Length: 308
Length: 247
Ligand SMILES: Nc1ncnc2c1ncn2[C@@H]1O[C@H](COP(=O)(O)OP(=O)(O)O)[C@@H](O)[C@H]1O
Ligand SMILES: [Mg+2]
Figure 1: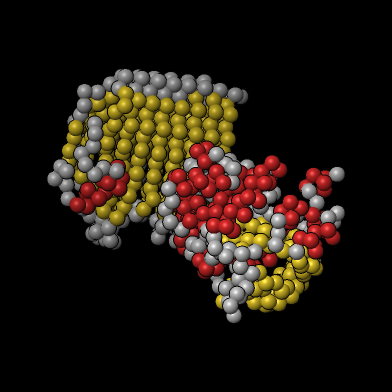
Figure 2: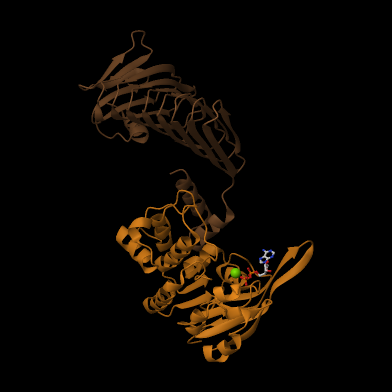
């Protein structure tokens, strides 16, 4: 496929489930270079003139199409900041698969800071899937600092799944969203840190239009000596409803700081937050052991389920 | 030894420390259970029934005494090892798991990949419409009664020589009592030489026992056939229907 090496292929598979040339529009970025692009009648991809990223234009009324924009880094010492802007017309229904994998076998840090800005048109439904992954045995760190901004017009629906399960040494992610009337944002985040990793995840969601809704659900596991900070703020500036949930399992000497916050600036804003941090419940382990699993196997099953 | 007992509890005692003092929960308990037996353990609340079940499964370790399974001393074996030797246990209060689905739990119980059709069979057995449940997460969206049935289904999937059920009827509607009893009978038929221990207060379950064991204050007060034990129990708190108790 596109003359990529095996590690790039492995990473593409890991972050975007790509084993072959994907259906529909795509843009592959490998070690800061364009490695392949396909546009369709409805989805156009244009490199920014200053070389800092791409602009994506999705025509109004585009339905049932996929867009893949994976990023691979497998050279040690690559550091980049990339700006991708998505201009999505009205009445669309599109799935966007992003994802970044870093394989670092060298001594230098590799870092990808991706800034994604989504302008979601009226009545459009977007499903956005993003996976982050790190591998490689080098001492150089694998660093990912994504910034995601979502601007939603009336009655748009954005469903975001963001997952970082393995191998990223340091991450500082920020997601900002502004919703107009009737718009709906659903975020599902899955995060696992191990070793000495650190992860910071922040959300700032502003519900500005009447009837807008947001649901931000984060599940995370911190093992070994890793640490995580979850910082989610929902502001209700109109009659709206918002919910955040941060549910974490802590293991070994992991550390988690959860700071959910709510800000209501309208008497009809209904905002709820829930946060829970705890170790794996003993009775869950015991139950699975009575089915014949060892303690380690039971732990693995519980975590797999929790992060599914 | 020929027909040795499947399960033997010898001089089993269990105490816990409470406010710096030893509190004995089970005292010098002796019990033998043969192959192909249906044994019901009954007794007042707090008499130590659940504790006894946990000792058999290895969830609690005895303060003194011995547990033999098929002639082997399993007193020091872990829960996992006992499970692998063929003991299973349905909890009085089933555990919830975020993200683990009914199908996953049945697969883990069976110890192998089982098809949707097989998993559905187990669910139908316990009176759950399989299609509605197979993909459900075992989380707080399930009611207590649903969880109890799923718990029983996991034991059907395990197919072990010894199955211990702790108050399986709790939360299950009265109309399905007959089904519950049929499940136990089928289990025994399907697994050669298998025995079942049920902890229950229900007269209808007591009636089908090969043997009834009455536990009280951490010791066995009486043990024998339905004819021997039941007449004495009826009218005592050990064998009253839940609705009876409410009066
Ligand atoms: N780990 C424990 N620590 C303290 N007390 C316990 C413990 N386990 C059981 N008990 C006590 O032992 C007694 C028997 O409990 P249990 O076996 O659950 O009774 P049953 O199932 O017959 O109702 C109860 O008084 C209970 O509170
Ligand atoms: Mg009990």
